[in-house]
Amino acid sequence: MTGFVFLRVRAHRLLLAAALLSVLLTTSVLATLAAFSGAIGDAALQAGLRGRSAAAASLLVGGQVPPGSGPVPTPPCATGCGRPSTGCR
Image (cartoon, rainbow, N blue to C red; front, side):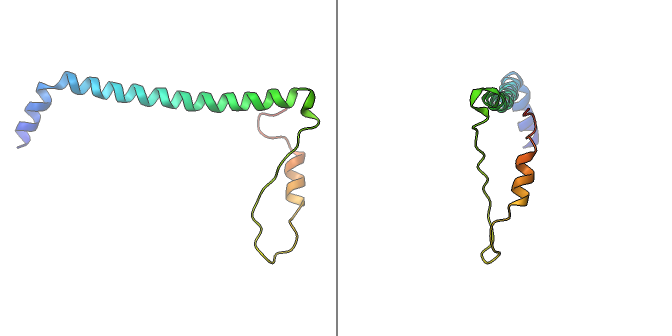
């Protein structure tokens, strides 16, 4: 049975190589597009924060507070808002 499989692989090695190459090319293109879309999002955020409306930009902070723990803690939010994000100037 194993000999038969090896004979089929040997007979169709060009087709199998083409299929493997297409899978590798598709994977690399998709990875490149994912990285490019992340870079475009960062560039758009930086450009938006450099514009005239940067002073009026608001920050929405969300989180989950367990019930019965009292009011929402503001010091972590205040320290996080005072420090710029990675890549933002």
